[in-house]
Every structure is written in structure tokens, then in C-alpha cells.
Length: 83
Image (cartoon, rainbow, N blue to C red; front, side, top):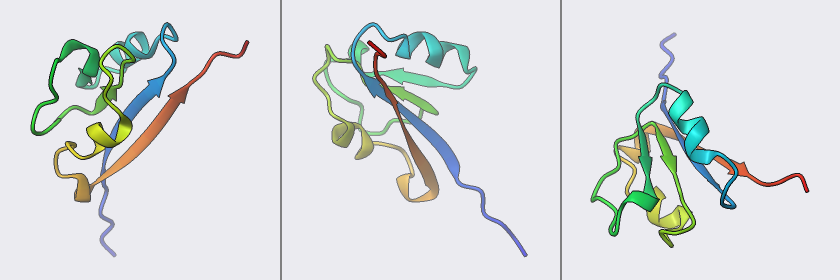
């Protein structure tokens, strides 16, 4: 039996100052940060996508642009403060 392994794409989102970008940088995966763009690219090829709060982009905005979305597993990773 052949098992098809989907390409994982992690989408980090949540409040500011919770180390989303820092953790993304420690994964060793390719990353894209929405706060570094005025406009989203046509396709996002990164393995980790960080949705920053300054950019104003939503999860839906990013999701629509994930490269080859039908053949990947999008994993939403929410960050929130414990206090």
C-alpha cells in the first residue's frame, strides 16, 4: 500500500509579542512573514507562514495563496498569552 504524504504548511497566528517569528526562525524551515509585505505574493511557497498583526492580512487571505494547497496539509498554530 502506497501512502501519500502531504506537505505540511504551518500557519502561525495570534496576538503580538508572543514570539511567533522567533519560533518560526528556530524551525529550520522556510518562512514567510506577512508583516514584511505591503501586498501578499500571488503564491506563498514557505513551510511556515507567520501572520503578523501589523499587516492586516487574515488567515483566509494567506490560505488562498498557499502553493499547491490541494496537496498539502495546512496546520493552524494559534498563539495566545496565558495571562
